[in-house]
Length: 367
Ligand SMILES: Cc1ncc(COP(=O)(O)O)c(C=O)c1O
Image (cartoon, rainbow, N blue to C red; front, side):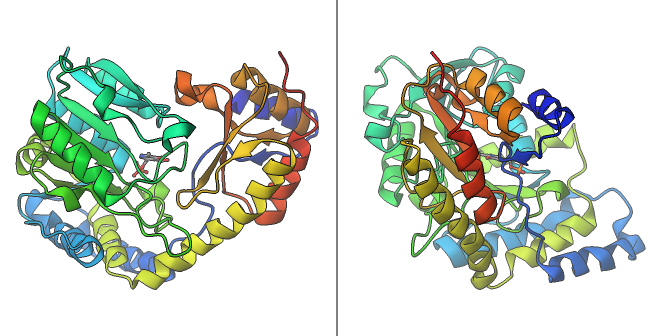
């Protein structure tokens, strides 16, 4: 898609890049202020030790209690990450052996496939379909499949589907029965619309459950690379040991900024989410005007549209970029079940999104 965008630009087209879920909003000013001050404090210049991460671990635990009513021991059940993506790849290395089975939703966030490959895992996919609200049917997994890990993500990328606390309770119970660790990737925890608030998988208990949180979306800190893992003591401890061989935790200034961000009033996150909600309200009707099928997202920063007659989403997305300058993600990039869909990241203002939809209406869907 990058190359198609470059070709479009060389033909004089203005690019509208809706292909990456990287927030275009600024982090809260006070978060930047904390970071700026930290860069003037020589105490932040050295390698952070595990004990230095306590303020961020404590802030994360407080956030989880305030927001989800979940109580965690900040010493043993919380660990800072250099982003949820780094955390997932190392967590899989920490809690599996090569050849173990990983249950992965299809479609899913593409780096999951890479993380599974790095850990040498045998991937069994769980289809996510519109008929089931893009929730997996765990009852359909054969009795003899005993996965080491089930990986879930709600609010979901790419489908923007959401899950209830009851769904997580059932998934956690299913996992406990099969000796499976439930990993819930939760970067969109606060990017929710209207009165909808996303639950945490940790509400189902912390034993056998690890949740990955990120400051990339809610706090618009994607480039700063910071998040945290929380939950099962054994899994979090194993992750800490693997990371101990790999990195030294995020820069202390970023840890301070993240701890500050996690303590900000909820209204800060709600105001940010409303910006994405307005964009959703602009794009979804514009896509429906094209005859595309899209559910109204209650959360996340994406719209997931089924395009009638579309059989090759990659060819369509390349053509769309080259002919109109609008860059979207082909559904196939997220897995076989993504074919026939296109994903939009809501990372431009409403009028730009409406114009992008109009332009896409001029691109042939093809055979
Ligand atoms: C499902 C999912 N997990 C993880 C990430 C990356 O999070 P982080 O920036 O904390 O690594 C993203 C980013 O788009 C995502 O969509």
